Image 1 (cartoon, one colour):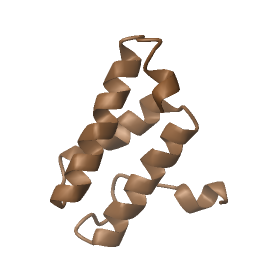
Image 2 (cartoon, helix red, strand yellow):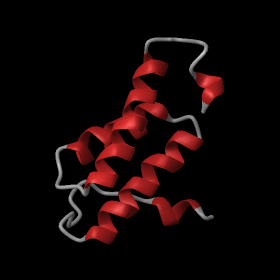
Image 3 (spheres, one colour):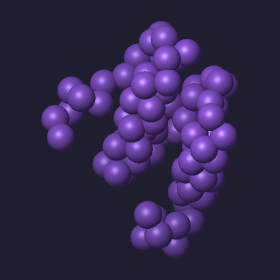
Length: 80
């Protein structure tokens, strides 16, 4: 999909569920592109927002994965 579909801004209206889902797609695409620091920044921001339990669990799993990568665990990268 085109890159411009995955633009994000932290000042968007996050009370709208579609905006939250859009930002989640953005950070997941960044993870697919192995841009983990940028993805983690979005995750930290989203974690402070009002999320559904499913969104929160997905976010926590992805954040845990990033934490494993940031500790330079060479075995974590192939798992993704």
